[in-house]
Image (cartoon, rainbow, N blue to C red; front, side, top):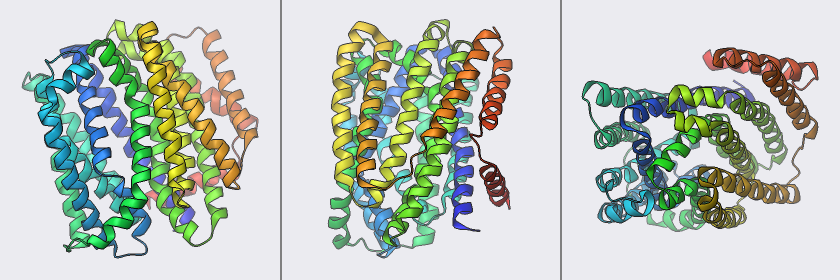
Length: 480
């Protein structure tokens, strides 16, 4: 299989699996909000947010060093070394979170009643680290599809377990967090088992730690800043208002986050390949892949943002409470637009990572995170959940604009403004027809909107014939 077809094949499989992961979040909305309440859903999301951020800090970005240096060193020994370091640090963080769980609950949910949730959620920190390191071993080895399939299995186990806890065992929020933690632990053990079977056991090499940490820490600072920038809205909503506001906002965020399934496969696939191509001096291929990835992301994300405006209230009303649905027409498109910018930011960062310019990207993300905190502190007390969404969107606009300007200055990227304008035009036609038709049926809108959008986009030659043929060839290669 040609490299371009392999990359496209990996992206297709990862997108399908990532879609199933996003469905997990959608399924959890009615299960938890209708049976336990919106505040319980907000508390559940907050536990995951804290665990993810702590895991990102503890692993020091070493998963990126694994990908960067596995080509020039003994990849098996490097994996054992970096994973061991990350797990030790993760265990220390787990103990810290467990001991301060009451303070964390008061700070981010305005109540101590969720202390036990954060205590059991602290166990997720080393579990997530083990999963992330295993995932990046597969990325380094260009075996993305195998990990994606395992990830998909875990997603369905998570959903099935939570359904059983709520509907069969009549369990509550504590039992849900415990069940999710158990499934995540089982997946981490299986994943590590498959990786260790490939790498074998090796004595950690202390000499690999220093160079890896020097490379990875700037990326970690940027990643954690990005995660904080992405999640500080929920943390500050919990601080200023409480778990119910976190729940309303998180419901909209979980739906809008479906857009991330467009960008994540590109990030997972591009970084290891960009690193290899850059080392070989083939920057032109990196620029072409980036251009293709941008077309793919923009072409799907723009109509999705518009579509969420059209169907948002009906969709959230179907999944959750009338209170949450009332916010949907405003919240969903604002959050979705921000997520689209996150995706673009993620794509362009891969060039900086591949070329070793990690500090520059990290400084941008740190600055954006500080800006986001300031805007949220100002807007949340005045505008509530809408203020949180606007603050985050403004931050993403500014952060991506700075990154894009630096990309133009440092690299000879391919810019396709005509395609972006055609995408906006097709989406505008879709919006006009959706509004003027007066259709209120969720099913009819889900059918009508994509048909209108792609018909217009093809009509104005936004999709090239050779691109359509390439996608069909890649799909064939995926399942061959």
